[in-house]
Structure formats: structure tokens, C-alpha cells
Image 1: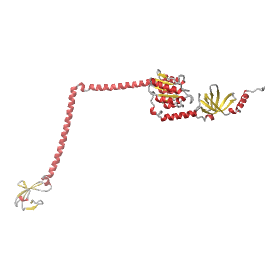
Image 2: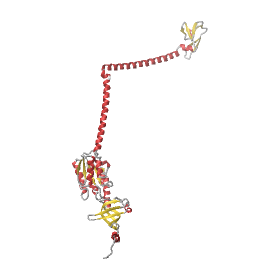
Image 3: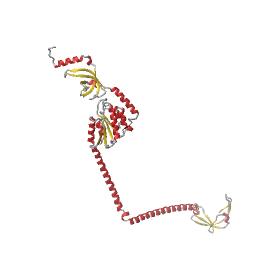
Image 4: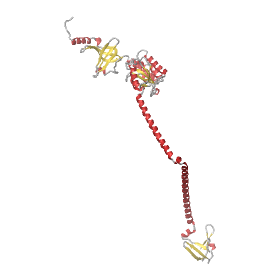
Length: 412
């Protein structure tokens, strides 16, 4: 035993060097559950990992945290890679993590993608199968753990949005062995009961293993065969499960599921009030139109003096007929006059007076027209009618010529 007295910093530095020199502590793989996770503004991560009997502090500096492909969170089971040492300033033993791997995520991811592809090929996720949520459910069914925070969140939101809304809880284990079977049976029981209009099915956040019950085929098929619309609400906004794809609606959180499924009572009442006011205004406007029409009818002669209205109506009809007849007569008279004028002009063009106007003369014997030279004799006295008068003449000679048609033609 030495008599030297060490300072605290000397002691801590000694222990740090001893730990740093241990090859087993320089390349650790430690399995546990994340607890007390914090992300510092610097980008460094501070948390603990624990099992049933113990816990150990961990730190992951920013340059290593940037390479993570997921967001660490409390409750996540994982394996950390790094080295263990003492932080001399506080004397705290901790693991300096260089990498974190979610425990079993590789195999679970493969199972997730295989089941997703299988159910997708069967059409279980077809958008055409999804049903709209009821506008105003009479009662809401809930499938979740009786003791979980998810139930408290959903009840709080439902009571806030619609006080007095009926709720039927069909509690089920949502984590661990047998949870998937309980969830599926609860969904079937709510369908058999038939007293709810929409089902909220889910739980709060957790690790991939905590949420795995909602990635089981039995749960997906129970959701798909439900006759009641199902809202899936598993974990946080970034968590996706097979149940989300099979459900009619996926909500990011249990609270959001309650928001989607239950309408706000005050908003509905306000909308009903507006619709009632619009209906009342429409009825009043319609009634005013009908009253105005009735007033016009009541003031009309057909009601105040029906006999006069009948006589006036017939008188107006007679006047209309009279006007039509007069118009028709005027049109026919005008057409007849135009026809007479046309015929008169044609007759005048063909008459003997028109011929005289062109310089010809009409030979008359005692007032009768002479149409042939054979009727004339030498010395016979005849009358010539011209355009503007008459002349007396005597026949000096008669010459007969042959016409083109073989008849004789007299020329004086």
C-alpha cells in the first residue's frame, strides 16, 4: 500500500488510462434498450442503454451521428459499437459509440417487405377497397391497450371534439407474444357486435420490435375483412406498418386518428345553424314570390270582372281576325291590280293602234278593214286610218302577189 495521496483528477485520469489500455474495452458490441435519449444542439447524442439489471451511459459525437440511417429513440432495442472509458472530468463511465444498429432490423425488414409484396399482389392494399369514414359516427370502436398512453390520447381528443360520443373499447395486448392474435380477435369482435361505425386500431410509439404486432399477416387480414371502416394509428408519424397499408385510413398518431374519425360537435352545430338560416331565407323568398303572384292574379280582370274579361278577350280576338282579313284583302287587291296592269301593257303592245304608232296605216272600206288586195277594185274609194287621223284615197291599180304560204296578198 502506498502512502501517496491522489487528487480526484489524478485518480480519474489513472482509471481512464487503465480502461483505455484494456483491449476488450476498445472494440465493444453492447446490446440494450435506449433510454433518456437527447440530441444536443451541437449534434452530439447522449443516452443510456439498459437491460433488466443495469444501465450504462453512452455518447455519440456528431461526426458519427451523421451516418445513422434512423432516428434513435427511447425504447428502441439496439446494439452499439464503440469503446468504453472514463470521462475524467465527471468520473462517469460511458461508452463512446461509433455506430448503432437496431437489433434484428435486417431480418425484420426482409419479413416486412416480403409480407407487404404478398398482400399487395393479392389486392389487399387496393385503394378501390378503401371506404370513406362516416360523417358522424354514432359510436367509435377502439382496439388498443387498456393501460397505454394511446388510449388516453384518443379519449381526450374524442371528448374534446364531441362530448357524449359513444365509445366501445375492445382492449388487446399490442406488444409481445400473442399480441397480433389479440388485435385480430378484437377487430372481429367489434364487427360481430355491430354497434360501432368506425374503428381506431393502434398504439403509441416504440421500437420496430414493439410495433411488430401490427406487421403480422393476421392483423392485416382482420383489418381487410372488417365491414367497419378502420383507421390505423400505430406509433409516430415516421412509423409505417402493414396495418397502415391495409386500413381504410392511416393516421400519423392515435390523437390524429381521433381527430379524423370524430367530427367537432361545435363545428357541426354551426354548420347546421347556417344551413337552417339559408333554408329559412329561401322559404321566405319563395313565399314572397308566391304572394306577389297571387296578388297579381287577384287584381286581374279574370277574377275581379270575369264577364268583362271574357268579352274583352273575344273582342280582342275579333279585332285581330279583322286586321288579318283586311291585310289579306289589301294584298290580294294589290296583286290583282298588278296583274291587270301587266295584261294591259301586253294587250296594248299587240293592238292595231300600237302598229299605227310605228308608221303603218289601216285600210278601211266603208268602215270595215280591208285585209286582202283581192277585195279592191280600180277606182274604188277607200279610207286610210293613220296614227293621228284619217285620209281618203282612190285605188289606181291592184296587184296581186303570191305569199309564202300559197295565199294571195293584196298590196295597195
